[in-house]
Image (cartoon, rainbow, N blue to C red; front, side, top):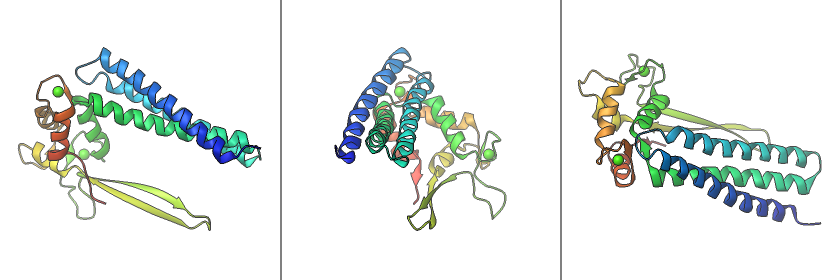
Length: 212
Ligand SMILES: [Ca+2]
Ligand SMILES: [Ca+2]
């Protein structure tokens, strides 16, 4: 009998490479069809998340097979799923490195991550001391160890630099127009996308910061 770890590992590498390169190729084609503005970002994102979803489904199928004693099949499916998820993640990074992000997409992403009360504005002053301002976002991951003890891990991110730079009229509210003005200012060649050196400068000067 073959070693299930070898089967799983082999499947992970093979699928990771196929999915990673395949998704990258599809996403590059999308970028080629929409070289300017934000039109490429949504379809490229769908390709990436579609590949990740297939990977997740395969890994879940692998867990079921493992739980029912079909070790080789389970290892292969689980490995393939993990590989596909890693491959899709890599494809997303490659897309960002090669094609950057659209100015409008970036505005949408900032609001999606930080406009917690969904009023279309980043409220830098929450109006109350017990509530965090909308320049902060947190993600919480749940961990369960083998004893069943559950711990939570909270990561905090801040977009304060971009918000401060964008709030032109200093009313502690950042509108989409204010965001677009500042983010668009990093689009040096005016093609509607923040790419390569533009993106590096953007990240360095006003990009989201990980606070811990
Ligand atoms: Ca808001
Ligand atoms: Ca540009």
